[in-house]
Image (tube, rainbow over the protein chains, first blue to last red):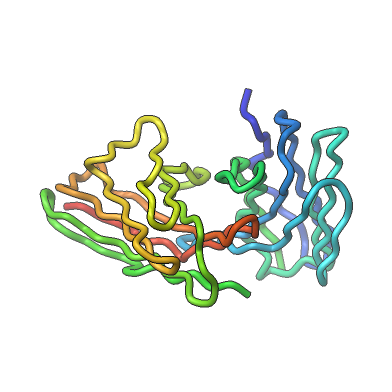
Length: 110
Length: 114
């Protein structure tokens, strides 16, 4: 079993839809939780960064962390074609390297 | 936001040559830098972790003599692929982190070995 599980998709939604992306994990020691967006042939771009449990909102993006369930989510409101990319969840303990999910490919249809 | 610059973005070279990739943090001091390799449609695979002024820590299965990492300053790390062969062709990505802050990634280097 992988330490971080993420549905690879692809996930196809119409423009304007609310997108829900999720990851589950098994290591209860993870403290920092991140979501990255990666376009083809580019490096990952940090979208959201959360420490411990709770919600965080930034524009159209909302990140949720539920440490009791070992479950994190990213919601994208009013999705746009430019949101089409691969979304990677990532988490770590302290200053250690990130453990990534496999990434979910999102396609927003105009 | 934090910026990490990676250079070159694409390199093609002959088998047997060595290739150096640079990773710079432009607006923060990177106490730790990481090097990843990514195959098509796969997630990032950590190769090594380097702290400024220290030797890099390599992940299991990564050849230290093949992939030389130097982190000589708080803003620069380099990855040198020595005696590169076609199987080393891949997308290499660096990231940088200041203390416990989130990692920021470069835009990657596409390496093609002929």
